[in-house]
Length: 66
Image: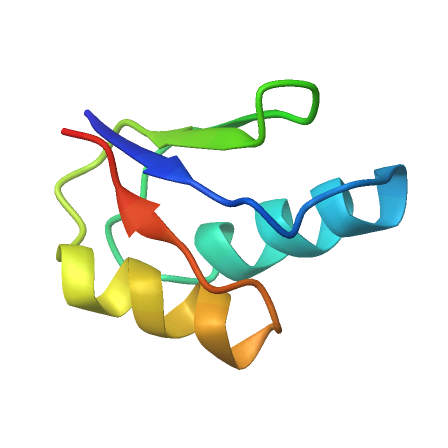
């Protein structure tokens, strides 16, 4: 599992956008977003650079916590 910190995520719309961006990455698997903690978890073997790039393109720069 990969856990990501997404500090700019602050509302329900942000959460939905983050979920959609991560789910669109090949091999992402299940995506869980915790809005209050500003974190997301991806269960699949997707490459970290692809996950970070998808979030950046969606307007949510992120960093890995693992």
